[in-house]
Amino acid sequence: THVPRWAPPPAPTPSHAMPVSSARAIPACSSRAHPSSTDVLPGSPDDKLDADYISRYLGKLTPFQESCLIRLRQWLQETHKGKIPKDQHVLRFLRSRDFNLEKAKEALCQTLTWRKQHQIDFLLDTWQCPQLLQDYYTGGWHHHDKDGRPLYILRLGQMDTKGLVRVLGEETLLRHVLSINEEGLRHCEENTKIFGKPISCWTCLVDLEGLNMRHLWRPGIKALLRMIELVGANYPETLGRLLILRAPRVFPVLWTLVSPFIDENTRKKFLIYAGNDYQGPGGLVDYINRDFIPDFLGGDALCDVPEAGLVPKSLYRTAEELENEELKLWSETIYKSASVLKGAPHEVQLIHRRYSTIYIHYTRCMLMTGSICCSEEDMQRESQILLV
Image (spheres, rainbow, N blue to C red):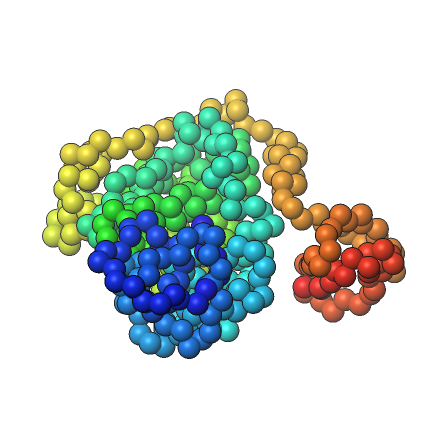
């Protein structure tokens, strides 16, 4: 999911076709094929992107937007050692901040720190979805919409959110939601190749038939709001359209609770249908091919998303058990935390290489003073320590 640095372009050579599988790096203005993952690509803000590359993988950009993308990429290369996101994902952060470069820098930097801390780059390879979640989570990917965007279907009204939280805990559900978003990024890349045009977001269809007061259970709403916050901060501009179908009378209550936490630009992408309105003009057929409309919505396409039902109460776990499980999940990060009393020392053993960087992150929003002591041997390693 990452792109290497730039290299000066070679002398122009004739080229008749653009490879489909090369959406990995920013090409300079030449007819050269896209660089491989081993290329080193330094550049300057005066560089321009290849017009075919923009059209094929990024979508229409003004000269100003193109310049913002190049400058943000260069800033990442200069300040973040190692892997950096692909152009498509960097562009999402710029679009979500209306191409305000400073705001995009801040948001992207926070996301890179979060991804590193929780090892999100390895989530799809390491995440093992519990069997109970496979049986009772009523969501899944289903073909694509008319624009070629991946289509995700969530039968929220059929989901026992209270039962899932009581059995699995909030952290497990959050991991699953993050894995869905990581899958979405991959599907976008795949559909970009399949349809020969930029696909940077997906469509979500939410069926609310069966939604009732049980879904307004307070811990469940709390978990939902946390998911909305994390997804909004770390996966901006990935939702192209949200189709909400068969909204019942209780829906306005749910909407009142969650809408303040949804970005205004994202709310504009919501289309809400009550009853069977989705079957008429302006409904699903305007956005999804009839062949792909799920059978439970009157279409012909078989859909693997189950109705699930209620999670057996016999599987419910105590608050203490859930807390221990969540602590276990939190420990699966590269970061270690400690609570240090005022004036008290705290010693940590570190293994690091020469010229490495040690980051110390203060989590409380308050002025903190103190000192960090390193042995003479550490100083000889010529490493640096940064307080963030």
